[in-house]
Image (tube, rainbow, N blue to C red; front, side, top):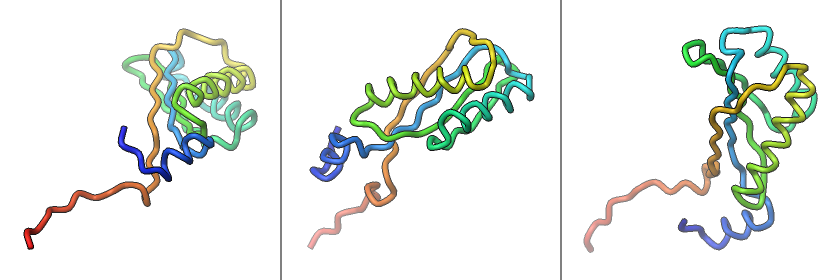
Length: 120
């Protein structure tokens, strides 16, 4: 990972933003469950800006949200806590988690576009 000093410093202090996706079996075609889960996320953790999606073919429901953390492991640990607390708030019965994904969200100012070097 090639970080600038600024990016590394912010990540160390917990200012790095991560996006998490946690997918659970079931509820793939249950619109009421999706609404309940979103309401649970908004009630328990409105700060994460959650979005719920469903896959009828795979019969899964996915919560996508973001948070700040010191590193990806801490972000994942926080994400699991948010997932559990929001699930309890939703009133849905928990099912097996079938997939989890985490990614570092690069701020637009930190994204460097590729440039072609022109010989002098």
